Amino acid sequence: MEEMKEWCRLMPKIELHAHLNGSIRDSTLLELAKVLGEKGVIVFDDVKDVIMKCGRSLPECFQLFDLYHILATDHETVSRITKETIEDFAAENVVYLELRTTPKNNQAKGMTKRSYMKAVIDGLRDVDTVDVSFISSDILINHTSEKKKRIFVRLLLSIDRRETTEAAMETVDLAVEMKDLGVVGIDLSGNPIVGEWKTFLPALMYAKDKGLPITLHCGEVPNPEEIQAMLDICPERLGHACFLQDEEWQRVKSSRIPVEICLTSNLQTERLTSIDYHHFDDLYKAKHPVVICTDDRGLFSTTLSNEYYLAASTFGLAKGQMIELARSAIDFVFADDGVKKNIRELFEASERAY
Ligand code: IMP
Ligand code: ZN
Image (cartoon, rainbow, N blue to C red; front, side, top):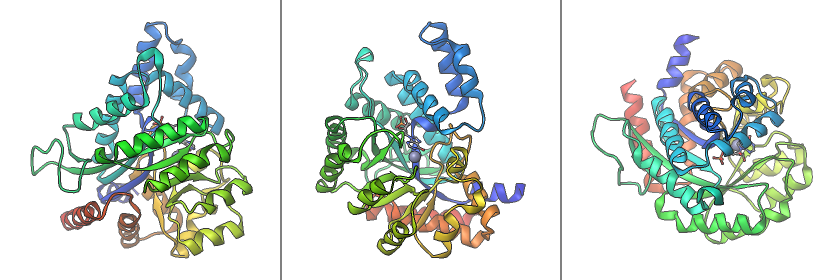
């Protein structure tokens, strides 16, 4: 078991569904909460238990997201969380990371969606333990040593389901503006029982018009009407897809839309009673495009290596199948062909080395 876990850590991997603020280290979260407690912004004892709790329900997760938003409101903190998240993924041999985040306005802190994203970019530039490439396929940022690990990072801007059409449009405009700064697509996320599809549709269609690929959190709760409407716009990828019915699965399978699989997240938020019944099994056996992801590595106390280990141990995947599964994700990244070529090379070099 331990040998297999270590093997999963060493294997080169691609992460395509990771939320920035859901990836905060527990230690950082506690530290930030303590400081805000001392300043009287929050009552530390009120939040300590939620932060320390394991196995949170879905409502508790969204309660924690609200807390994240209070904690991570200044630019410096956003940069720090970004830097640490990149370092954590690189440390477990993630060679390409598509990190998604919701640009936030916070007037009291002088934060706009644009300045929030600038803080994210600053965080990328601050990383010094690993070579980070986030602008173009051949330019490496912070490139100091051939011996250092290398990670390609691209960004997705998330539209939160609580947002208005105007706010969602603003996010898409920002994504278009930031194409040269590593932004490669748009995500729709947030509490799945909040908001209406018609609110986000104009912004998503606008993103499509601008050539930005889209990934949607889809079917996190049973909502056939919305799932059908989501499939109607032909998104480039789907997240979760837990509550799809047969007819909807047929549409997904015939259009070969890759599905981002987040096993621990789905289990902890009670999307299914047992991991043995997870739709990964059916999709994998049907050779449908799937990619193993963490969703929120901090919130769910997991890692991408752990998610691969979970898939292997639950569904009986051999090492060769795991490598193929990890490598197949190259085809589903939103970055350009130059980056895909680079990641392929990183995979080959990494496989030779271990
Ligand atoms: P952020 O966008 O960097 O602030 O990352 C946290 C946000 O991601 C949360 O506030 C949610 O809007 C979204 N999110 C994270 N995990 C999930 C999920 O499982 N379902 C839906 N939305 C999620
Ligand atoms: Zn998610």
